[in-house]
Amino acid sequence: MKNLLFCSYIICFSLIITGCEDFLKEESETKITSEFLYNEPEGLKRAVTSLYNYSRRMLNTSESTNWVIIDRGTDIDVFRGGGGATFFRFDNLTPANENVQAYWEGFYFIIGRANEIIHAGENNMDQDNDIVKQTVAEAKVFRAQSYFYLIRKFDKVYFNITPTTPDNYDEERVYGPDSVQVFTQMYQDLDGAIENLEKTTAQPGRFTQGAARHIKAKVAMWKNDWDEAIRQVDSIKASGQYELLANPSDVFGAGDLNHREAIYTLQFSRDVGGGDGHRMSLIYTPVYNKVAGLDFSYENGGYGWGRAYPNKYLLNKFDQANDRRWTAYFKHEWYYRDENTLPAGKQLGDVAVCTDAQYMEQMHQSCSKFTDFGYTIESPEERLSYKDVMVYRLAETYLMGAEAYFHKNGGNDPNAIWYFSEIRKRAGLGEFTGTLTLDLILDEHAKELLFEGDRWFMLKRLGLLYERARLYGGETKAENRTGDFTQPRQNMKPFHVRWPIPQSAIDQMGSENFPQNTGY
Figure: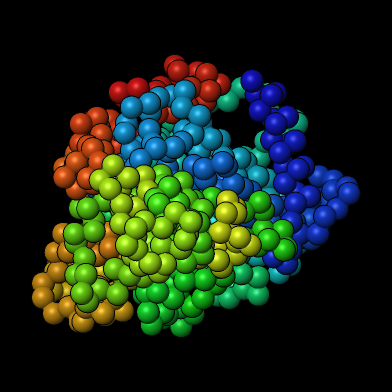
């Protein structure tokens, strides 16, 4: 098994490394040797660029499942079907689940490559070389970020910062689970990255000092290290590199999302090596063309699969008349455009209506953060979008600041209230002047950051994931007009707050060394 894994890593890496550096523009080379990659600064730079490419590829599956499943099965979503449905329904979340395995292996692949880059940069090259310092810093962010995704989902990880080489891959290893060293290493990696990364980059999509600080704040929040979280959030604010955009509609309202609020964004481009595109837009867009009088159009959101939606528990939290996010982050209406199937008494351009039976699949209110309204697609029927995918942005930084100051000093802390108010003011709700509570922070987090990959993690961090999913997950028949989609309320068990370790990993490491998570 170890031989097979090592060979597959080498094959995958050789394929990735010949991928796309200025986009990040990676020039295609006919021959790139390990000696060049790990002994020359330019080779090391190319090696870390491949990790950005690989990160995009994790969204390139047929349903972008590796990204979608990160945030399913919480209190604010309802899932109709598709590859990520089991993470909402909790009906097939087993050690054999292929998406669990892909998640585990994908992040460990990044860790393995980051280990090689860091080792080569720190042992084989001039430490004063600017390219080496930058590249090693980026690799450290990749390693810290990957371990952070893994530890939050599985609660324990196999910790390794030693490169796998032909000389050591068949050595006996101790596969004991770890959850302590990994946090120490994440702090060390991110501190090293903060010291050496530039505040800005000429290549959108690369890690900057701000991204490393943002990730460290998230790690500190997980540890209840409020002082460190505050230090990083305040540093990001004081850097002057970022600002909340004036209107929420501008945050996701383009194909290119490299604006002042973005801290780290996965880059996609049809023209300069942005991978194969992704299908995030399809997942969140209903199959509205099945309704008489509708066809796929840019105005209505392009092609749709109708897999995942905001639930009524979330939608009911909004001040619909005043909160700008109500129209900026959701699509509530579709418009008749097909004269050949136009219902009697309707005109082109009228707001479409549907039956109760059609609602869940075809016209459920949807999240439009990923929707491609003609930004990058060349026809409304195209299934691949090249719209950038936001990973970290300043709104999340500010909400972390509000929560960290709240936990440290209480609900009347002026800094907590300032960070909280900035989000509400941008939404059009005015300045907050009351006493801050955890429920208020949770509600604002849901309204601002819905479907951006953090809800599951935040609820788990606070010990609320099981409780909230059981109370509010999915929708009742009265809420969705079609039938009960409330599987989280019935199926979720306490052990579901962590995922099963993939059986393939247990087989490799040995269950006596690395036991399966309880409940699986």
